[in-house]
Length: 206
Image (cartoon, rainbow, N blue to C red):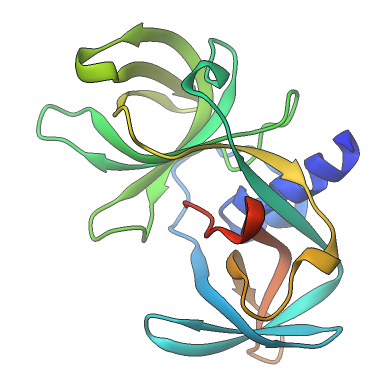
């Protein structure tokens, strides 16, 4: 299961290079391309997903994996945890989380701070948690460190927090909400090496 979770974690590496090899970044990477929506059709090699901007067909690589986002308690975020969080930059230079996904122990992928499309102006930060401090109204303040910097990020009380776990291809079917990081293939088609789903048919929070 751990190896499956490690492979599935590639869904949130958040760039073509890290999808290919999990490489560490020396500087901020460009914002990745993503596809979100509900599966409307699929075959052995592709998914058609209906999202806010219409339908998109995505070709799946031969070894595509499935990641399941399992809700966890805030205590799952500890010093030393490697996390990803979609966040909104604040005027004081800190960030405010829109969601948090916790990687399996020992997995570090997509490290850095870069543009994201959860909301206009949002960013993605992937890194190792330093300090965790209790804040106001049940929030938590995190110091998140990555190879070329660090962020102070507040996680509000009711923000979705999930653990990345391994899933099976049988869990991906029409009617299921999905999230994918995609890149263009040689023929111009969108391609994905992993599909992220929520537990019990819920939409992945990222």
